[in-house]
Amino acid sequence: MQDQLNLVFAALADPTRRAMLARLSEGEANVSDLAQPFLKTMSLPAVTKHLKVLENAGLVSKGRNAQWRPCTLNVEPLRDAVDWMEQYRIAWEDKLDRLDAYLKSKTQGTHHGRKKQN
Amino acid sequence: MQDQLNLVFAALADPTRRAMLARLSEGEANVSDLAQPFLKTMSLPAVTKHLKVLENAGLVSKGRNAQWRPCTLNVEPLRDAVDWMEQYRIAWEDKLDRLDAYLKSKTQGTHHGRKKQN
DNA sequence: TTTATATTTAACCAATCGGTTAATTACAGA
DNA sequence: TCTGTAATTAACCGATTGGTTAAATATAAA
Image 1: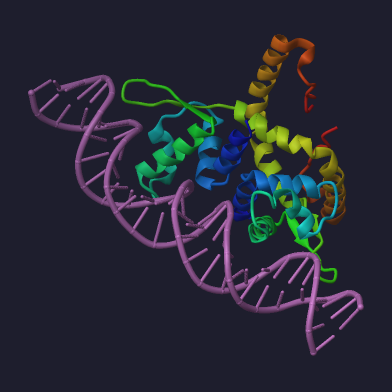
Image 2: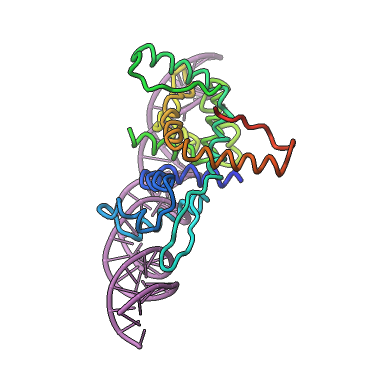
């Protein structure tokens, strides 16, 4: 589904949502767990909405446990995003590698290592 | 810049813009070249706006040649997007690999090959 | 200087986004 | 059944998005 790809990229385009995914990559979390870091800057309903965006993109699944809603990371839709990038990887890889080589030559050992993908 | 990452993902969240990047991955193109596939469905100013989004994300550079504006793909900002994915790759990779194995077992030889990244 | 082509800008519009507050629903437990 | 906690829904709001048409700008060429 092409539409899914739109939703996934759009979901990733917000730092709050990326942070939520980062948190979920460390394991299951309830809505209030996910909300906690953001309650200084936004309300709980705002968090619920962000979560909804992630759910609609298929990136998060919500379970039920009493009054809690344990959320888990759902990795399949990222496949679409990865695939899209793969599709043009050959064309881009050369440029990226050249950039890498350039950066390495500039910063020498201080540049954090980046593996060649092949 | 975190903000750049927002712009890059947001830019990728639209199929018209992804198609433009795909076209540009094959080489330089003028605005009208880029617009051509879409003029059945939208106006030229709409294309100009999409191009602006790509420029603001740093993904496209526009040159000048007489009345033409030759556009080129600018790959560096994709680095941010790749980096973000890399950051959680370890946590996700296992799940992706397990999904891969599952899909392979389901579809056997018909599944298009997907290299293990390591 | 006029004309033709390439592209952008301005002004506008409806829909979506990211947030709010207030009210509501879902449960567990005393 | 009442209370407290977890989470969602509803109604609203201003800003942004993705499109439009009409006008303006940039440049080459007759």
